[in-house]
Length: 114
Image (cartoon, rainbow, N blue to C red; front, side, top):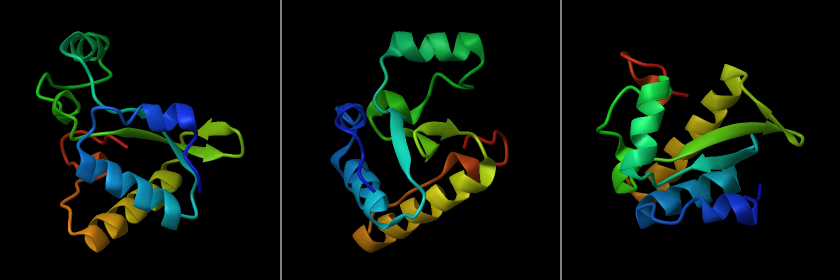
């Protein structure tokens, strides 16, 4: 699976280790996905918290240690939860291969952040 150039640009400012995990996951997954957001500014994070789209001002996005992805079915975004488990499995596999710690928001107990 290939990430589009536009979506690859969304990895600017993201920690190089996480970029490596994302790129490797894109190679090994059978579930296409795209990057929606990587590094965030403080003002962007404030806006997301205000809207309820994020729960914290301590987001790992602020340091470039988090990315948001969307599952793709054909040319459309899908919010079907099982698709995100496939992406998470690919991210975990890629992180394991590369020896890079990885945590998926969908595994959090306090807030399911697929």
